[in-house]
Length: 145
Image (cartoon, rainbow, N blue to C red; front, side, top):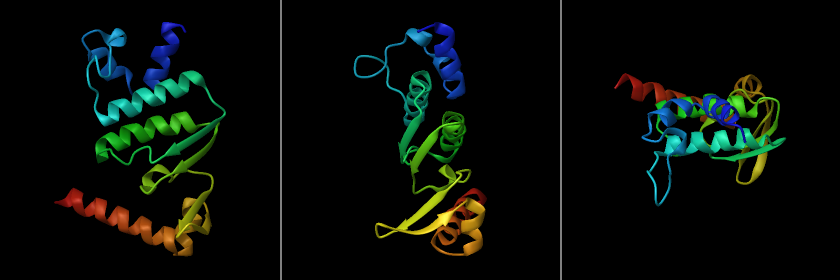
């Protein structure tokens, strides 16, 4: 693996900046015997590793669930670059992760109850629209406080 490929993947994953700030940069040991990374930093390293592998299919399960809002924004940008041109299955409770998906399946009690794009599902006014308004109304309320 060429160093420039690693740097390109880290840059696309929004990880290059914090990696260069580490004592040993890209040679820094992480994990049990190395330094500890935050949840968002670990997510971005994982995204960079996936970019290097270049899979045709992605399965993302709650990829941003443990992140604060600002870190989620940075990771979501990296995920959008990762998913571009790939078949991706995204399992998410945070709808911000799937807003730009080609097709969204809304599930309730283990059954698919709605299928469509973000705009189509909002227009239907069903489960997805209710969840969207709950999440984003709560998000806007917390920003005002």
